[in-house]
Amino acid sequence: MKRKSPQVIAKSLSDKIKNPLFENVVADGPYVNVFLNKEVVSVNTIKTILQAGDNYGTQKIGNGKNIVIDFSSPNIAKPFSMGHLRSTVIGNAIANLVEKCGYNAVKINHLGDWGTQFGKLIAAYKLWGDEKRIKQKTITELLNLYVQFHKEAEHNTSLEEDARLWFRKLEDGDEEAHSLWQWFRDESLQEFSKIYELLDVHFDSYQGEAFYNDKMEGTVNKLKENQLLSISEGAEVVTLEEYAYPPCLITKSDGATLYATRDLTAAIYRKEEYHFEKALYVVGHEQSLHFKQVFSVLEKMGYEWAKGMEHIPFGFILKEGKKMSTRKGKIVLLEEVIIDAIALAKENIENKNPHLENKEDVANMVGIGAIIFHDLKNERQNNVEFSLEDMLRFEGTTGPYVQYTHARACSILKKRNIEENVEEVKGLDDPYSWHVVKSLMEFPTIIEKSYYQSEPSYIAKYLIDLCQDFNKYYSHVKILNDDGQQQNRLSLVKSVTIVIKEGLRLLGLKAPEKM
Ligand code: ARG
Image (cartoon, rainbow, N blue to C red; front, side, top):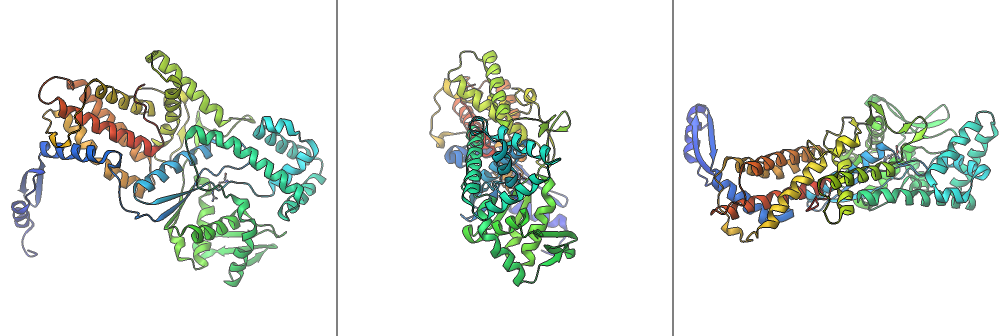
């Protein structure tokens, strides 16, 4: 075969390819053109989807191995920021994709619950704290204490010393320091849980930075054994010249460990605990250098598995082009943003469908879905402009649009009984259904692609395309016409509902049947 011309090979191939899915196979010069048999392909696709149900598109890539996903990871005693929202939403979608591809996702919330700032917080609380107020408005009150500390510390130098002592005590396990810290942590976590409940995001572990406190010495010792530590201005560092990165700080001159030390320790711990094949860190791109340093240090320590670690960065959330974490010193509380979205969704529903049952539930699904979809529809590295009005539109590229299309398809299915006999499905002979079928066929490939690139936006964009194809079909074809084709059209509609619902689930959205 080798010495023959491409034209001859194309011709002989085209004679050999025989497949019921192909209507025609013809050689065209050096190319082979394959024409799909639309009817056979349509029937095959619909049958596959109806039989698989929400398992359609499931892949066996992972074979049950573990992938650890470190995401959300807010800092206690501080507001849950927009950046943490992005990490939560993107991380959760990636976890769903990872599972859809046959892995077991280990979801870890690496809480920022350790560091010298807790010395400051305890010092401030001892001076000005009010237990009742903290119980009522934990994060706001703790933030106030923190701000007050910095203001007073400008002219009262003994405060910094006070804070250092409290952090020392905390590190040494002093009872008072520890119980205050524990209280701040519990109260903060309770506030964060409200957000996780609303978003329906759950974790396998909340072992944050503090958890590694008693394991850090092991890491420092290993670095010493490997002769990787050098002293720089009293601090211990690992130099990373060969990677062209600045040195990674391991301990400060007073012996205190750092963020990177905790991440090194956490990585080693997680490898031992979960035997992961991959470890993903869904954290904003401003921490890229940090993760490059951490991964390189692990490599220098001789850990082969460090190759399976990956930072999944993302851009900022902007409001009118500006970063949105704080507004003139006033914090934007995420919980309030979410509640606003739900209220706006409720308004939309009141206008469109005032007689809908469970309006509250649906408004929840739509409001929250709108926020999630808006975040995920653009490639994660891009910045996202935050606009409640835009994200809640029922038309255009929004979550509500996809949910609405799903509900519309469901309402057709409610009007007629669909016979569940998959064997009876036959071809569809209108031009619009072919576009829908082609879209449906792509779903498994899109899942694979989004998984490999940790890019949920492919799923979001895909859903928009599918919905557009379906809505064209819906407006041009009389689905409920009583001709011999009605059941076939209904099976197509049913397939569409299955794929949209599963696609939305992967992104972290619900698919109400009525809107
Ligand atoms: N708490 C950190 C922050 O808010 C994010 C932690 C990310 N995860 C990690 N393993 N470093 O910036």
